[in-house]
Every structure is written in C-alpha cells, then in structure tokens.
Amino acid sequence: MEWLERMNRAIDYIEANLTGEIELREAARMACCSSYQFQRMFSFITDVTLAEYIRRRRLTLAALELQHGGAAKVVGLLAQAQVEYISPPPRRALRPA
Image (cartoon, rainbow, N blue to C red; front, side, top):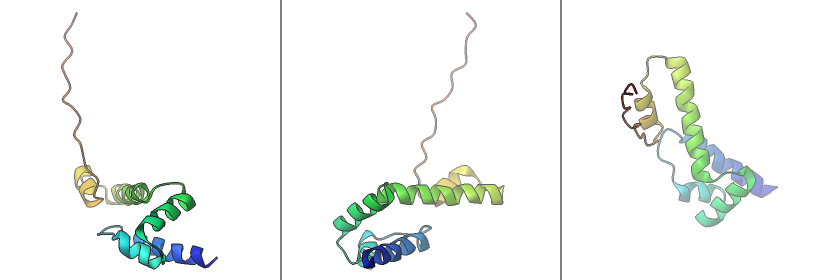
C-alpha cells in the first residue's frame, strides 16, 4: 500500500495549496510518478478528474467563506476560488399580450 501513502502525500499537497497555485508536476513528484500517471491514478482512486476535484474543493471553501463571512461578495469569492464567473444574460421585460 505504499502507492496509497504516496497518493495521500500528493493530496495533502493539493489541499495545502488550494488557495494558491497547484503544480501538477509537484503533486506527481509527491506520488513518485509522471504527471500523466498521476492524473490517471487520481481519477481511478477518486472517481473524479484532478481538475474537477480542485474546482469542487475551491468552491467548497468559497461556500464556507460565504456562510461564515456573510459580507463577502460572490464574484470576489469566485475569483479567489479561481473559478470563471459568467454573468447571466439580461432579462427581458414581459409585454402584456
């Protein structure tokens, strides 16, 4: 189960750097494998891609910040979570028939 310990070290690295830049090569180095192998192993173990895992974890942190901070703006938290915000289309006024 040595490979599981190495994968846990890589996940610890990802968790420690969620608010900053996460280097795929560094995470793969922690797991003692190539970047390609790391992404495949990660997806196999977690049943989700590495990018999706990071996105979900960042959004979870942003949601917790909203719950506890209260005054934070959603767009600012999305930027902090490094999630692209796409504004909704403008609403059209309904005309009476």
